[in-house]
Image (tube, rainbow, N blue to C red):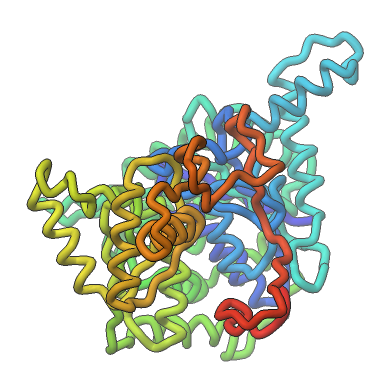
Length: 474
């Protein structure tokens, strides 16, 4: 088994997830079976109870696991099905170790971060790395591990120490460190600043991990002189410095990385059995996809009515699905976000400008999607959007709470059930059109929803859903 550890420097949110996914994509195009692990150094057991404003959306896996949105990137890029244990959190590790201590597994020893926590991390990684995530059931050959946050964060120290030990446990030829760092380019000078990268690499080395690859993220292309400077001051060969600037679409990231001979690097560093030279059609589907995404002419205006629209990552999977659908249909997606509360009647008095702008944007749309959410806030605004779509016959898609709101709106305004509501919002409603599932535990917040991939059987009666899926179950 080969391992590629992806760490981050300077700041978070510079695209470690996309870089890690790209490594896997390129290796998969070479015929290598790949799996991924995301490490989040927070004490929460999982991401299920996070506000979308904390880390963006909570991504739900087929097995019902509530995980970081980066695992969505892995699944989309690599075409794999990950499991809840592919997302490691500090909370999971500590819970695992404490449970072992309570059951007497440590035989009275003092349980400490080193060696017990660090050993648990290493054992978890080794166990998960061998579990198949491919549709064909093949055993992974390379495991790509993304360490969340930035090097130097106190929360991540146990994981850094675990991987310092792990590199000797699995041998050097089986372990590679890729460090993703920001290269700022202040607009006042336009000069690429390498000092932050030098500092983060120095800190990484001080913690016992030396980067084999430095991925430089920047707004604009980095010239050769800057690349050589990073190579010189960070003590790596120029071939070990990969530069990725902001591109027209993320589909171009694998192409840019492949042009910088990343395959040759991994072949040599990890002793991978990849035949070279490769045929010219290597990664051709990514070239075709990138070209198609960049050359769309016809536009389609879609409006998303949500409760967490101040942060786009709150609806990452929804927006990615819309982008993929638009590309497949040959259209350029123009997505507008509307705060649901801005569509409510009381907003006409509180903030008439926001109210009228929201309705203008809604009326300009060619289709509306209302995604999920929790709580009463914004429900009337979502209902107003549903009613407008129904009355104007605009294409509408309700997801989770969005569908529930559509049911409530129809019950109130078409079936004349004035008190129609969801028992989640109003437990005492006289017309409960949406009810809690019997297995739902209302006494606990985390891990209580029925999530994941499940078989849905359609009735024998004709329905639009059955027609769209084209079969009796999905």
